[in-house]
Length: 122
Length: 252
Image 1 (cartoon, chains in turn cyan, blue):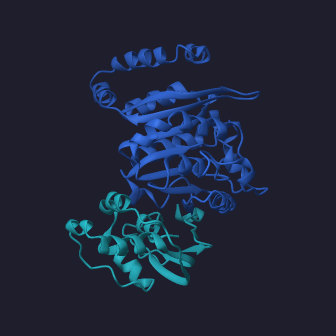
Image 2 (cartoon, rainbow over the protein chains, first blue to last red):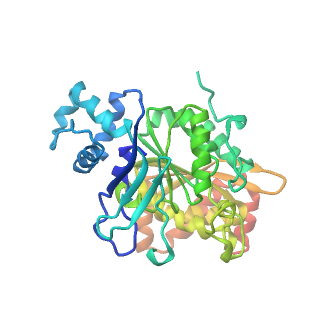
């Protein structure tokens, strides 16, 4: 699971109002090389919740992303490379995503999060 | 150089996962038929709801290219694992999520998705067969096969970006003209890209997109009920090549 996916997932339990970002529990992280594409990153940037990405990357041990970011940084290849690495190359392979409000764990197995709910959570 | 669509011999399988069949082939044929438009569309985010074996999302990734990001969901945990194997065998990537339709993605992905593809469980079945785990979730569609389709349409409307497109498989029994009318009321134009008569099924692949005129008419319909009959007429005129749909409308 890329951190891009973590950035797009919220707790879907009924009644939860503050379900984002999901906390990350790590059992195994892997890095996978992905072709760098500056245009894709520039298109993706406005769709990303930056603070959540910075926090998730730190949890996985990557601390190179700045806390705050101005859109002008998208002209810097150095910045785009870091954004690329955090967004696409760091994978949570085993672990869990945890609802920040209820503590409910959504397991991540072989890189795939399972967001299925029990009947009483829907 | 990779092939243009997924190859059957590279599609992974599992006894509990729906294998690519006529409906999957018709959906991929529709994507191929619309390939030029898809490439000009330059989608950033593409999503498949109910990916099964991964045949369709893999084909979409091969057609559009890795300039876009792909996400695929399935309620069946076996299916997402098989889909990942299929994607890997073709050297393309999609992020996979085990979930019901787009549950967990709807808050953050609202208004962000440029292309959604859906081959929904469209087979008319008893209502209590819908949404079970395992392979039955791939086809059991409840009354008129509309149970899951009717849940998917508002989700797709929420997720699609302003320029977003939805490609969906329907069966004649699902009453596609009514589906198009419902989507028209949400401001979408629609077009049938592929029709296919197989031994058992009469399939249509419909493309929906946000359309300014439809949005205006949708607003007008609230004020003036008579507009809806005009909409039906214009919709039926699109279907002049499909006498079976006229037939189904006469029965209403």
